[in-house]
Length: 280
Image (cartoon, rainbow, N blue to C red; front, top):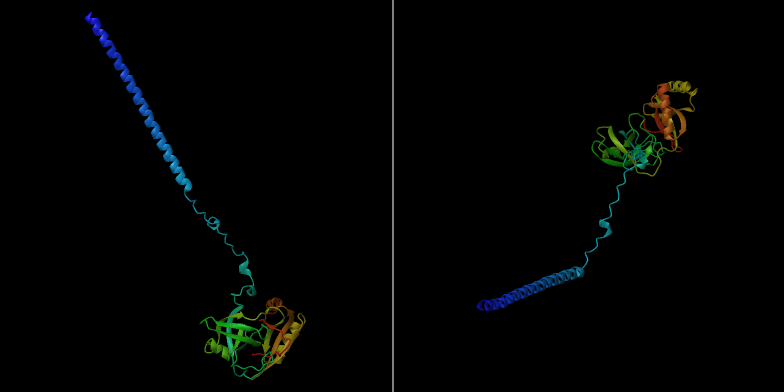
């Protein structure tokens, strides 16, 4: 009897303990779910707040198109630009060679253009440039320059390209040396190759020698002329061949005379006005 009562009392106590444990478990589960839910809400609120912050940030400034446009490619010069004529290349000289100068006894005489030669003016003699052409002459040994006007014909020595007046030679310091290397730059707006030209093939003190040369060449060339030029030591007779249009044609005629006749050709311009003077 006692044993039954004991069991009766014990059984209810065991049932109550299990119930309490189950209630505690459900409570803990509920609390855990609430905690998880709160965490999820916190993450959601934080994420939304973060998105709102990013959305309200001002957009980055747009860079101008120039920063993304590639620079234009450099244009290379034409392959044949180096072969352009001097008249198309202002920095290239018209001519380079040797310059001499002349003063007395030519001072006061008529120049080839009809003017009286004044050695104290800035003038010069050239074989092919038109009268009144303005030329800058630079002494290539010292860099000094002078500007002259072409008024005369010469020089008549084939290894020189220009004869300067005394004043011009003084400006570039060529009076003492007599002959210096120079560079010629044309300053006038002209075509130096246009016009009529002739080829001088000899100059003689004896008229008979000039006549014999003219007779020999007249059978193959026309015209062949003798131009008399007076000097202090007597007349000088110059033999000239041809009257051709353009300096290039005159150069070709000169080469032909050199090859076939064995002469030293010098090209001269034929002037419409003036005389056939010049310094010998």
